[in-house]
Amino acid sequence: MPGGPLTALAPMQDVTDLPFMRVVAHYGAPDFFFTEFFRVHAQSRPEKHILRSLTENRTGRPIFAQLIGEHVPDMVRTIKELLHYPVAGIDLNLGCPAPKIYKKNVGGGLLRDPARVDELLGALRDAVPGLLTVKMRIGFDSTDNFEHILGLINKHRVDLLSVHGRTVKEMYRSDVHYDCISAAACTVHCPVLANGNITSAEKAATVLAATGAAGVMIGRHAIRNPWIFRQTREILSDQPVTPVTLADVREYIERLYRETQLPGVPETAHVAKMKKYLNFVGQSVDAGAAFLHDMRRAMTEAELFAVCDRHLLAEPAELFSLEPYPGVIARPNCESPLENCSLDTVTA
Image 1 (cartoon, rainbow, N blue to C red):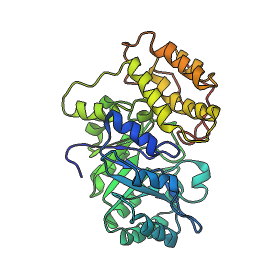
Image 2 (cartoon, helix red, strand yellow):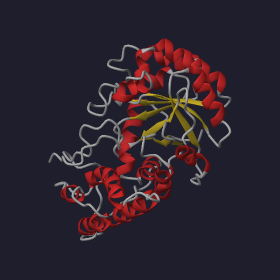
Image 3 (cartoon, rainbow, N blue to C red):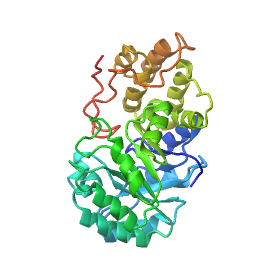
């Protein structure tokens, strides 16, 4: 593990693919990347587009392969396949809060069944010769099993634990229970990454001080601000935090658009996908959410970049807010960052 507080980009389905990792690395890579989850079941094989994150990654950072599933033989089979690729380790998803996931008793659904978690971690520990990591929430609908599962993390010699400080049922709506992350950091024998509403480098420093965690894992706010990992390293080493201008954000959007373009995808579909990223970016452009209002109505590439030029290049030296503006909502009623997101509602 690197020295000093650790940083990691949280695995986000339909977000943390190879193009997005490349973009984030351009602005200051975290210490670790995690893939989107490989879905594991009887007929599954590692998804080719996720494997590209391992085989074509030139970020210079270790990349952990995340798995979601619960059937031990299939999980072990998949691990054996993935160990042929340049993985830094294997990560088990015990936190996905999407109902379509937890209803299958995988992801965050497994937190209801500590006995199953015990069996699964034991099998994975036997199958993984190197680093075994876990990303979890603090419970399903309560924290009743949290202490028990932390004991299992120790029992099976997990090497790194990422804790999102909400229950599955709380999704992204509640305050983050940083006290639970602190309890994990005091209990388990491995480093703990604090995850959940790490909005800025300053917030990262505050959370690290409050929890005693070994580092932070940042997800949605790295979509909004890909400079956040660089800024976090700066603030933790008492250096000035890199300022970001609206012109810098315009360049980021252009880079993101080009990197995430796929052959054969219609322009309107790609613009629609970009809106989902920009739903987060717009939280820090203007307090009145005018950028979000106009961006959501763009239908073509030309219209989208005309909006960007109008809002980001009129005053190009104006600073991009390091924190989201209060009341500017990125994605109400979402199950995951780029799935089932309303693009029409901003609360001022």
